[in-house]
Image (cartoon, rainbow, N blue to C red; front, side, top):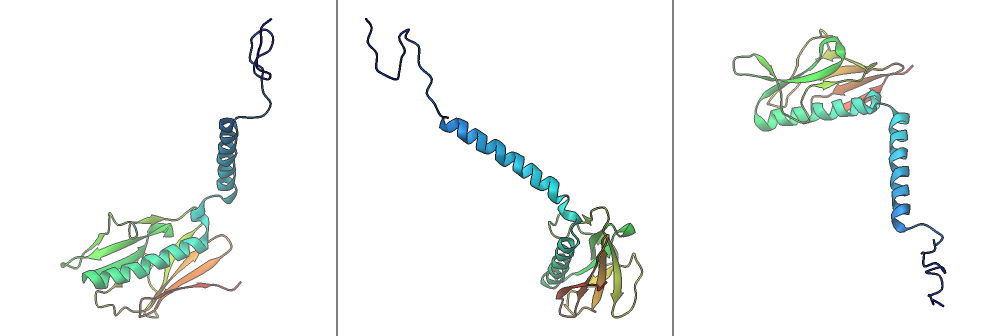
Length: 174
């Protein structure tokens, strides 16, 4: 008569299945649930660029950064709403007075807005400006106040920059 340790082998010498799950099985289940939840959250929130408030904050930060960079590097920079108002672009003015687009800068690279959002210049030095105008940010830091308007489906935000290069975001009433 064979002897065995209780709970390990049955009479025929086969291992008996134990109840419960292994640690690996539990961890795999948790990872699968986490991935599914992440996908659901992204799908529920949609395109984060479509949030007008977030885009206005991003643009305001880029404007303040560009003004500080212009002073630090003693260069004249400019900002412009791209054609059709679907984004923005920063420019550098050369010694010959020509504007060249800034490239290879994580903050000042051209930026495209999500579908449904548009950006347009509102005013420079208290006067209306053309839709394709490049608004300068001088090396001296003495800039005229200017403003852009960012429009979404049901909202309009004004990004205003004062002579001290501080950007403010104002929500239009309505």
